[in-house]
Image (cartoon, rainbow, N blue to C red):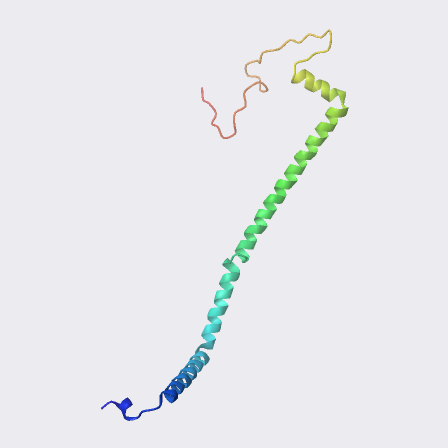
Length: 139
């Protein structure tokens, strides 16, 4: 015969016994394994702190990018200052204006004659510049 069939309990008591026994079992399980749950949670937090979106590695990458951007800003500031100085010289210095007029526009003062010279072979200034990464031509 079936053992469970011998004793019949009202359905309300059976449910209460089951819920009490489940709660008791769950409480016991949590007490026995609380250390492991805490260790697993701590490990997950450490992993998040190192590899997460705002973790140590992401912060290091952001600092590196910020330093690169700071260097670019400094270079652009220097270039901007040089260009502003050149603009100021072109506005106020007649010698700078004359130099550009002579070299870039080929102008001369009244009574002067310009004799264009062809580049001499082997002249370093007139030789076409080769890019640094291009191999040198062998004769």
